[in-house]
Length: 345
Image (cartoon, rainbow, N blue to C red; front, side, top):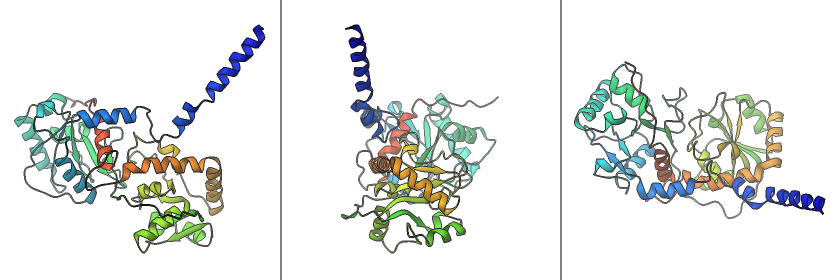
């Protein structure tokens, strides 16, 4: 009887180990199981105070302009700086370091908030980042404040600091997938996404790949993505459509010779489980073997995770829950208890 009880207990433990919660966890695109709960808290509580810029200006990219305009008319903005969790520092992209230092100096003298954390509860928008300078105000902005950068960023990193800064995803809109989705290709390639002419030449001659320049229109483009298992990119080149690849079920394959720290929502989404990362393309045969093996082992699950995560890449004229604007705000919310870097005396 005792042996039977032991066996029964072991069998029960086996069933528990195979139970549904483990499966549910693997189907979530989020790094943390508390993401949605924390997101709801952010929507209800997060407040941002916007400083007045020295003069009116425009940002140079569409994503920056849309984020700034959306922030200004959002419910996150407060006129009561005492209740703010974060402070936004707006300045023109062509502001010189000297002028920037003067602007930060005026915030330091005119408001009590910068000195409380040496700018660690402040953030700014800049695709190019802030250059190196010995001025205390610029150093604190660069090292302490959260930079919202652009994706894809500059090849030199654009002064992006991982784990502190946030990446602004490129503009994609809420378009719909084609009704009939027949997978025809192993991989889809756009010429300017890959710099290796020899690889392009090999893939052009392979019927498992569709290689082209820019598609003729948006409908054609979405059909390409929907009919391909994988979409091939080189980090630092044309990676701006990675969100659209996810949306239409095309698993991203990204080549990078170093760790990628500036992917959109890198501290929110399980990128390693919804994209393939390679250090080099290799030859066509090697690439095909990797892609075929990956698709056989986990392709459908990667595709599902990507489609689920793609809502975070959608920009809306009127923001909607979990879209790009709200997801960037959520990453700021996660950084509201940032550790400051004090200036060396």
